[in-house]
Length: 74
Image (cartoon, rainbow, N blue to C red):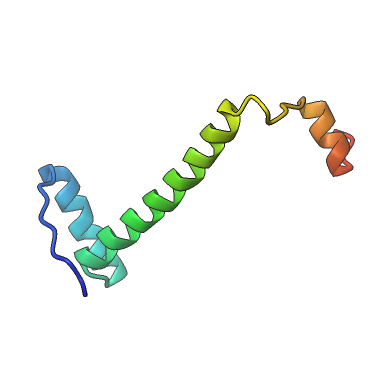
């Protein structure tokens, strides 16, 4: 079941949102939902990358080694 959330936006952001909604023939709710979904997916990927970077047992390889493993010369 959908949950209602209220937020305050700067006037310029609200205006840009309204313009985008009009141009794409989508509702503000749809655009905000899609933006949040995209942000959360990106943040999850970012967090995985940070966790791997901080993992002392996860080896770090050079870009040269990476290219070699991928079968690329340059």
